[in-house]
Amino acid sequence: MLALILPAQLLSIAGIAGGVAQPHIAEQFRTTDIVWFNLATLLVSLFTLPFAVKLGDVHGKRRVMLILAAAGIIGDIVSALAPSFAVLLIGRAIAGFYGPIVALIPACIRECFPARRVAMAYGVVMGSVGVVILVTPVIVGHLIDSFGWRSAMWLLTGLTVAAMGMLAAMPETPRRGRFTDGFDWIGGLLLGGGVALLAYGGGNVYSAGWTAPRTAWPLLVGLVALVVFVVVELRSAHPIVDVRMLARRPVAVVIITAAFVQFAYIISPVVFSFLAQYPRIPFASDGFGWTATHYAVVGIPAGIATVAAAVATGGALKLVGPRQIWLPSAALLVVGLAVFARAHHDTVQVIVASVLVGIAGGTVMACGTAMVVSVVSQDEQATVNGIAYLALQVVGGFGYQILFTVLAANQVVMNGVPFYLDAAYTNAYWLLAGIAGIGLLAAFLLPRIQRPSDALAGIEPERAGAQEIG
Image (cartoon, rainbow, N blue to C red):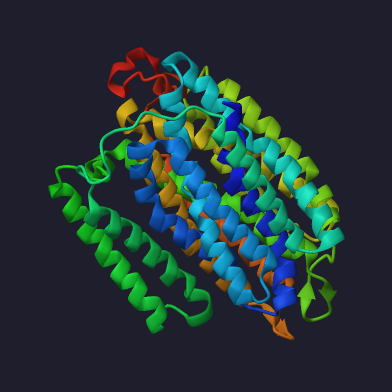
């Protein structure tokens, strides 16, 4: 259980470190394409996910996670040493190989622990994200102020090495068959390629617009690939994803609401990072001009609120269904982002707004996976976790581009560096509030959901009976 904590949080740590470092990277390389800093990682992660899951079943999840982490180390080293923005993006793309580790963790826990211990182990491993959110910005901020943004990449390298050491200490999971036995190669390529093309096409919206060939064609081909994927999976004897599962309203609604609400929370620190660290330049930039350390320290109250909310949610999920917690927390997230849109002009205002977002975010992150696993049987949990991860990343790919497009409407480019006026930050927060609002509206369609402790322990949804709550 302890060995899985750091590997489970690698992607979260990378996201936080990258968010703090992005303004500094954009200024050093004088680029307006900083949006690709995260999208390069996303593309590789999306494409490799179906194959990583299958390889984990065949060769053992521990072995596959070790290989993925080793690839991630190479990517982090390339990023840390990158002499140009293009090389940095190559490093970030290679680092995308450790993205699927997050999707393998839930299945790994389920296979390594007896049923009565699964819920506890899962709560400890995934709940540790609260500590990551609280501690990582302070450490990364101090490193960047002292040694520059490359120190954040070296921190990721060291943590990935430590994660490999932890993974090496855990037992291997059961192996099932051979890679060629019943593997849906066509389905895997269509799924991985389709979602990667959608993310790539969405990645060009900011710089080229919706109608440009490098935007329109990848989006069109990606959509066609996913349509063909559905047809292939419906006819396949060994589908890589049981798409019939998505025809069930509880599964579809949970995946949609989780993707939109969690994305709005996850991406909100990126906006605040630019607002806090970009300088104040009359008629060009309305940032605060804080150091990375100051930015991190101001975020401590929100970090504490996030951890407290996540811990409280973990306890509450033992007593009530996740729907009862999800609805008010998603609504609070919309309110918090709206407050950010209206009031982000001094330290007190941003602390108040970020604490509201932190409380809501800690709750939805602790509750999200609990909802996902509570609407399917034990045998379907690994599959639906993978689908939920894909949905979040696809929403993230488009949402990230739309976010930077909104910011660009009120930007001033000086010496190749994009700076943002106050209207850009206001509109960005309203956009995130709207995205969270879409997830909230979808959440009202949620059916009755069993307690996650029952689902993680293997009690089938249809057998939960009176245990269905909320």
